[in-house]
Image (cartoon, rainbow, N blue to C red; front, side, top):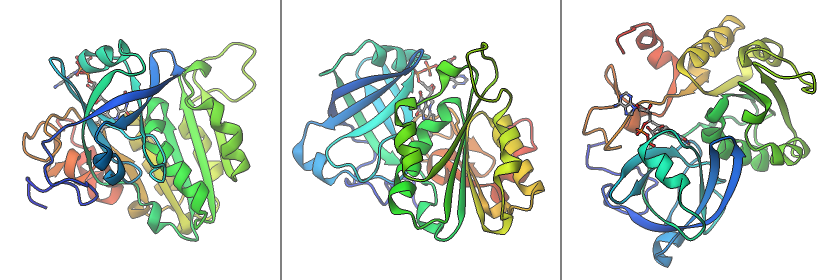
Length: 286
Ligand SMILES: Cc1cc2nc3c(=O)[nH]c(=O)nc-3n(C[C@H](O)[C@H](O)[C@H](O)COP(=O)(O)OP(=O)(O)OC[C@H]3O[C@@H](n4cnc5c(N)ncnc54)[C@H](O)[C@@H]3O)c2cc1C
């Protein structure tokens, strides 16, 4: 793919062009984390916009800047798309000050998606650390609705119970056959679930390693730990997929900000097969 070529799923030819959207709804997910449902202002773009689970957009607020944010809604939903955002800096803090009706410009979609169309008959285990679940919600919704895979496990860890995302959807996910398990680092006596790292739930969840696909998103040490634990249980390295987060600016493999060895996370990722990056994860300078 050349540096000027947009993602094949992009409905427009110009990867540099932002399209105006309006905020349709805002849902509080966790302290400082909100889900923004957006609708493109141009009807033609609204109808044509397509994305795949795991891709991201660049959200642009004029006069402030752009930030890479995963698309957290179901790709099958027509008319709107969702982004779940933690307010941590220039763009995301400004976004948090907008209300329903506020204008956000969107460039995308970009990046390599989760392999949800290549898991027929397999056990899929989705492992999410904190906000990582935002990039995986689209995959959960796709897999739960398509059911070509044999089973769907979701392991979601957070620092505290109030950091767990999408809690209002858990009943529906479970009703759709998702084996959802949550774990937190710290909790008071009222927390009924386990405490510890999400990695500690993984070993029990892998029942048939040769038929297991892992989709993982979270902080790097957690993801690399999940990958090594899964491989230690017999999962093939090429069946472990990690979504990497790196600072990025152009999103089309031009500026080099997100370069990870020979890999551009914006173009070759964010979802990358572990066998292709395992060596790179051992180089501290990267
Ligand atoms: C593919 C992808 C998907 C993502 N998906 C989501 C998502 O779904 N939701 C979400 O909330 N976030 C997501 N992020 C993270 C988000 O892009 C960053 O948090 C982004 O920096 C926020 O922009 P900002 O302008 O608000 O913050 P910034 O002003 O950029 O500041 C954010 C923090 O990062 C530090 N920082 C900024 N730039 C650099 C740099 N060049 N080098 C070192 N440190 C720096 C700042 O000091 C600050 O602590 C994603 C990132 C990627 C790459």
